[in-house]
Length: 96
Image (cartoon, rainbow, N blue to C red):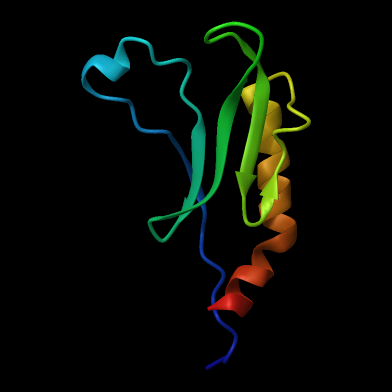
């Protein structure tokens, strides 16, 4: 048997909905990249200008934050985050 640790499989899921009165003013939900029930990367809407005006999407996690350079769509932000995870997932195994 190999001594190499298995890299966890990561899956996307929607950010949970807010509950109660908070749900009335909730903006668009983001996404979470999760592995073993742990959130690794979160994609969230970037608000600018007025109240709840989405100006783009950014992601954060694994020591990175792209809030300073948001992209136009949720799919673009997810693609960037997935590429970062793919390129750096070996670091997760080394930390365990």
